Length: 231
Image (cartoon, rainbow, N blue to C red; front, side, top):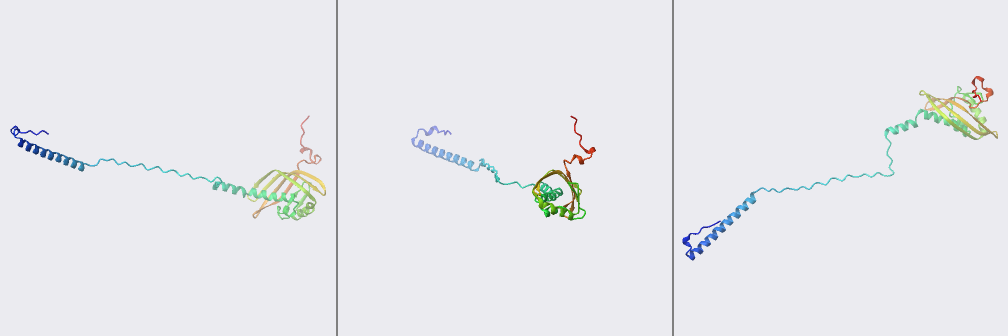
C-alpha cells in the first residue's frame, strides 16, 4: 500500500515526524484489521478433514481338531442294514442249523436235538439208506451212537439258505466227517438238505435228507451213472 505525502509538509521536520507517526498508526490498524478478517474466515469455514476409518480385521476361522481315535458314528441307513443282516430270517435259520452241527461235533445229544422240531412228524432220510421217524426215535438213536463217537471233526462247505416265504426255509450243504467210532477210524462225506419251519420265534428242522457224494457204483442204476470219456 503506498501513502502519498503532501509536498508542502516535506519542508517541516516536526510535521514530517507527525506524519510518519500517523502513517505508522494507520498501517498498524490496517494490519490488525486484515489479521482479524483472516482469523474470522478461518473460524467460520467448514472443516474438510477426511476421517480415516481403520478396517476391521477379518475374523480368524476356528479350526476344530478331530480326535485321532474318534470313530464317526454310523449313519442310520448303515445301522439299519447291519441290523437287518444280523437279525434276518436267513441268519436265524443258519443259527438253528449250526446248533445241530455243533451237537454232532460235541457229541451232545441235548444240543443236537434242540435243533429239531419235537414232533412225531419229523422224518430223516439217513446216509445209510434208512429212515428215522419221529423226534423220540431220533433221540434214542443219538443216545446210542454219540457216546461211541470220539474226536469228531465235521466240516461244512458249499452251504446255502433258501427262504420259502415267511415260515419256511431250506438249507443245503456238503459235509465231510471224520471220527473214532467204537475205537476204530471212521469217515464219510455227502450232501445234506434240511427243511426248517418257523415255530414261534424259533426255527426248527422238520426234515433231513443226506446221501453220499460218492455212492457205491453197484447201487447206482446204469441210467444214472456218469459216462466216462472215451480213451
